[in-house]
Length: 278
Image (cartoon, rainbow, N blue to C red; front, side):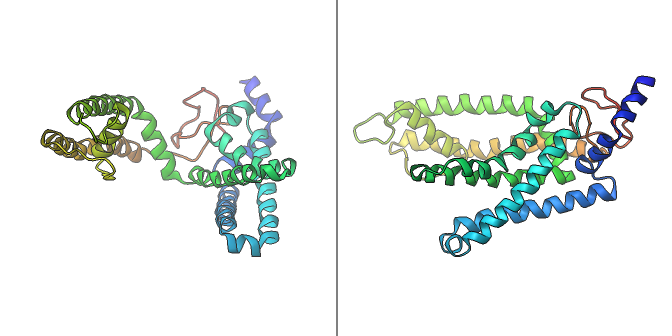
């Protein structure tokens, strides 16, 4: 107990910083989240405007200035997030840590890659700034519920997807055998599997279609199966969403492992066992 109190006393400023940056249960935390949300939306909007040739050419200087302002803001945020946790590497290697890094690195890379032959590469790298849009999910409570539901159903979803892969492989191979004649567009098994995927998902591009009666009959079966298959993952996730939605989840994040999704009355992190910031 003494050791825990000592740790709190030594890191009280970090805990306060963590409370503001990672949580939204306090006025300061809510203000930080709202300000950062606005900055993210404006930065993504600026990236979109830059891609429009007429606007990008006319307001090049203004857009460049805006980009550096946003980059500095997100750089400060990234550094503060690292400082505010006990295990910085956990945050750096996490999904949001990678997204945060991708949102600032492209602008700095543009300073070092100046050769004309790399202009296209720079443009591609800079467009990675659009990954900032993923940062928005961090500040939406419902997004955390969805993430928790997807995590809880990942095993069942994986089994379902594996079954779908097996199905389209078999259907594609069978269709390749059925449509094996001169002039057919089913020229290989991989191409036939592509057709099976397009048909099963009810997309139906129409670039490949069976010509034989047996092939058309098989297509009809796959199309009907497609409607049933689409409903399966929806039902799996919906059931889990109902469970997660009924539970009361706080915005609190663990200062040690950076994991979220704790109950309001939780005193310890359910992932690493660390005492949560009261």
